[in-house]
Image 1 (tube, rainbow, N blue to C red):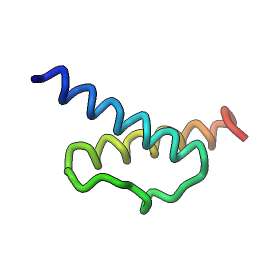
Image 2: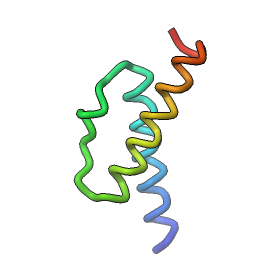
Image 3: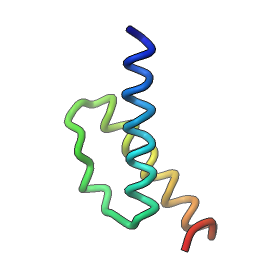
Length: 57
């Protein structure tokens, strides 16, 4: 059970990261669940940080 939950949250983080890299707004978060939304936003913030550091154009 924990593995499924972790996988779902990992996927939310990854989706958020990809959204950030592609320049989408954080308002476009598709998740309603608090945990998944938090992970998605964490991924989005990390992507924004990486973009600001020059890792992506």
